Length: 357
Figure 1 (cartoon, helix red, strand yellow):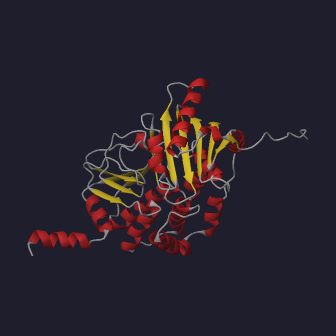
Figure 2 (cartoon, rainbow, N blue to C red):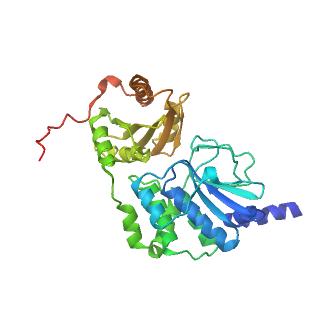
Figure 3 (cartoon, one colour):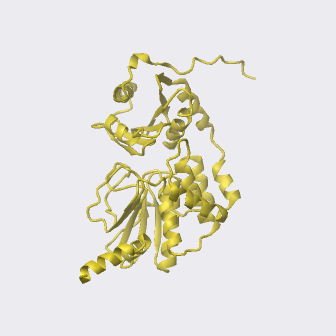
């Protein structure tokens, strides 16, 4: 056996975490980035990676960043209560001594506000492939339900003792990704949940799961219900102008539970974009792939088998512009699913209004 072959075999036997830490070793500082409006999986993954690096390379600064906003009530409660210290990505200086780790997304997939800094490390579980030229370490496992599962694996490999708060964050990060039925989870996701649960702070977990909600939350639900239409087994809902984009995903989760549907798409207007979320109640839906086809030439999209999201930039916010775009999205989706638009009907009739107290 040649020295080169022997070296390759040794590399193959290394834990992924060892290869990751070896990649980071020459750098003086670490910056961790994720997708715009990070979700619990992204937030927990960043926190777990900081614990890993602090354990293996003590004294090395690890900066966790936020791109966009943390809007959903559960996500905000998690970030504030764990807590997860975040710096706006636009305020972080990145130089030749800095390694950038990208988690829960990949470069140039339309899920970031800026792609100015190319990462040295990419860790992700999404099917949507990105541009990986120049990436020194990549761990891409679309067969897993959550990036937090991958990070939990690193911590186990390196025998890192984690605090109850970190365990809670990672647990909720996985839980939020594999929720729904049928579950998009595998044995490694379930194993991570089993390992994390006894180490988690149960009161903190309950607080994250059950946050208080603002009045705008209920107003958006009312608008979406009043503007939801059923086309065979597909619900298409217009959420109107929303105060935060994550509520669109919440509404897609809400509508896909209707016992007469297999597909739900919720669309809303946030800032200068049309944001959309798709949920599918059956395995084999390929929602990420289908939504990319729907928005081709208009915007960007991606996701998993049962969960997908996308965004389309609007040239202006005139009602007629938005209406035209909504009709295009609906037509393309229903055509792709082989459904006649003429089959559509309003999901709910107008509710009677009682006299105000």
